[in-house]
Each structure stands twice: as C-alpha cells, then as structure tokens.
Amino acid sequence: MKNGKKPTSQQKIVAIIASNLDPKEWLIMKSLSTELHILHRNNKDLKVISA
Image 1 (cartoon, rainbow, N blue to C red):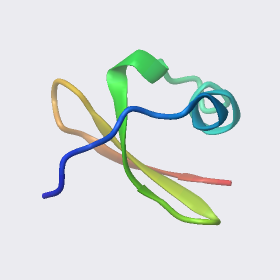
Image 2 (image 1 turned 120 degrees about the vertical axis):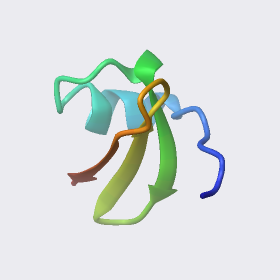
Image 3 (image 1 turned 180 degrees about the horizontal axis):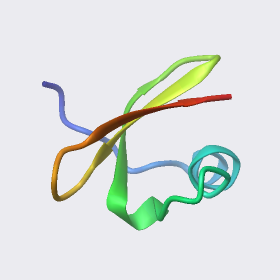
C-alpha cells in the first residue's frame, strides 16, 4: 500500500468536510476526477468519496 498524503485545502473543503469527516484524521490515497480514496490515520479504514 502506498503512503497517504495530507489533503489539500480544496480537498478538505469540498470532499472530506462535506462528508462529515474530520480532515485531520484522513489521508489521501488516490485522487481521481470523480472520486477520492481516503485512509484513516489510526485504524487504516479506507473510504471512497464520490464527487
């Protein structure tokens, strides 16, 4: 598994906060044009957020 990256401010505002998640707890695994794959920092849960 690749290392996650910190989300940019645009990703925080549009996707993560809109999904009622805390951006401090999530890392970006893959950023596609239609979806965002995020990984939890502590328990390694993987979620897909559709745009």
